[in-house]
Length: 311
Image 1 (cartoon, one colour):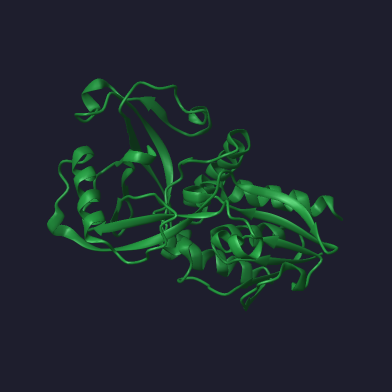
Image 2: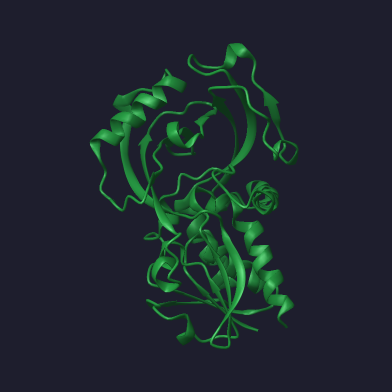
């Protein structure tokens, strides 16, 4: 079956890989390709973050965790590594639903929790270095016979193919008239210092993270809804550093070496469903917010399942 994937971010490329593996003919169409997509500047850590619907997202995340864990062992050139991290919370809460689906999880001792926090846990998670991962995904598509075409699409009904897989992210505001899709602005900094383990406060109002990569550590963050500004703001850098120091006191600001901004495609809930538009079968897969990588392989598997059902 001829499948046309719209969008070359992590969701689109992952869907293309799985569709090719299932024997379909695949073309990826996008107005932007790596390194110019928002996925290229993602932090990126496997962690279910502000994702809905919860039950479907839990399964998508579980599937993705297993695949990323496999890649870390079998395809280190992909840029996927496994690191321990610690999540800090300001009050005692229920443990996450995914705790039994990952390779290591434990509740932190009170002596391991920073001042100002009351609870937390340690977990083992894939960290994805997107400057390596995105070209690696593209190489997999090309080696599987997939093709790429640079084109801005403004009407789904004009796209050729037996099935269209719509992974345009923020572009769905105009392409699908979906005003539920809004940017969640994320500003990050890079520092030449390794925290040993990752440190995280994933609550939206206090979002903070230190994500250790092989080359740098990513410091964040922000989740500013409906903010389209792509310029680095000094006041945000100052706030990020203030929050990071609270959970990683050893951070050395003199070792900061850069930063960037990306606009996550947030939505009330992920849209993964089938629609027929003027006789053309469209499978939508967008609105992942800050969990695009976290849900990517699970969502791609469901997309393939929907495509195969249509045969």
